[in-house]
Picture (cartoon, rainbow, N blue to C red):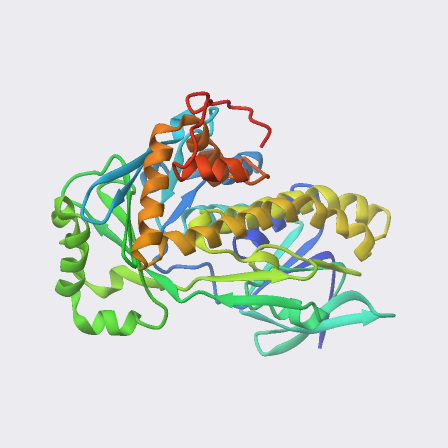
Length: 424
């Protein structure tokens, strides 16, 4: 058995774990990162970097390193009824610069840039093909972990263990932290296809149990999200590509030529959706970040972004803990107090959107479309939603009164007043 030591050991090199490792490395903190995959992800996975995620990458010195040929800034997002009617347009240009666009990237582009930066840092060791086995404890305090690397057992002593290993976190389970893990009834077929001409603006269609989103990507590529029932991906594939293209064309007839760009199932993948609510994110000598603590439905457009914000927030707090040799739950609780309010708000908002956007109920669908149309006329409420999606608000976008206004049941005397600083 090999024995290793580090100040911090991170389980999981995904969106949160990789950012944390890099942020700690830039502070000179010796860190070991364990990742059970054989290497960086390579599959079909489009990504939208919201403004708060862009801020994190900029802070790490990486935003300008995203390859220009692999990204696409997008300003306008049109929400439409299935069939084509526009309901509402959200303009990222209303946000304060320089982060006043969403950035659509090709698969795993941002992640690879982060991993490349990590591998140039002398204070970080990134171990691929390494699985978490269990925690090391002394007097009920976590002091490291056991892992298996290339078939050999490894013990890593550390002042703190970070669980960044996803919604079904084994670190969370080993800590004995209770969590409500909810799997949604729907997930998403995702695809990246080549269009006849570049798209300039994003479209998001909602209908009866129907969601289809088209996001402009680099060059002439288009990133698609199509809601399907969980467990139905193989059935959809068995029905054939023409069947899927017909379904998409019925939702957005003008985009039929784009849909013809799907020629092979290798252009697609399935994205399951779930929510995690951990009872606590911290223990003596350990902390959870990202999906291990708080996975959320992608309707919030903030899952990966919140993991990245977790990472830089924790990286700012850990040096003091390490210097004081105090990584107790009591001290680490500050991290949870800083992060939980925004995460909880986003999870609740995402669940509300699941209720209204995924519905097959015509009355609920009518209310959903009515709210979209109200937002299109109401600059104040529309900006609140935009700022929340962009990750710039920590409080809910709507008060109780705002909800009645959004549904069109009450007038809004301030509908045309959009404040950039609205106390969010």
